[in-house]
Amino acid sequence: MAKIVVVGGHGKVALLAEPLLVRAGHEVDALIRRADQAGDVRATGANPVLLDVEDASTQALTAAFAGADVVVWSAGAGGGNPARTYAVDRDAAIRSVDAALAAGVGRYVMVSYFGARPDHGVPESDGFFAYAESKAAADEHVRAHAPGWTILGPSGLTDDPGTGAIAVDEPQGSLEPGTVPRADVAAVVAAVAGREDLVGRTVRFNAGTTPIDEALSR
Image (cartoon, rainbow, N blue to C red):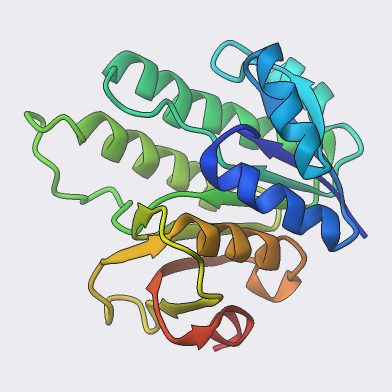
């Protein structure tokens, strides 16, 4: 099994994905911002690593990724502060890609969002603009530079119970954005981390009726 580093290890999706990865036999390090988050991470079976990615240099991230087979980016500034959004969702994400390359990581999984693209269409006056710009820039850097990359584009996240089933935007552009439970996003992260056949793919998805492994194989 693989050694996996989850960036944003105390996030809602990450805390749901980590026990799935551990149960699959992976060794999981979870990067966290604050020491008081460590207990929640340990409860998932993952190993908490204190490193605030907003301020961490490429060199510090490279050290955190040493020996890893897979890096999963599941961090985010949480909105509300454009400067911090750019610092985390764009700049730190880009540094993490460069660090994964420097550390010799073979696989990089980016958790993005359904509408992420350079022509996202969000007006500059909208509070979502900084996030849309940041994710578009980070995703483009992933596509250009990340090792063995897969980008996940879930629709609007809910706290509904997971169903184990999704609808994938395949062919791309055929599916309108909707919603998807965080638990199913976590299950997709866990499924994708161990699958080489999804390298070089952007997977946009909603809640649906097709079992996750089957949907990802189409």
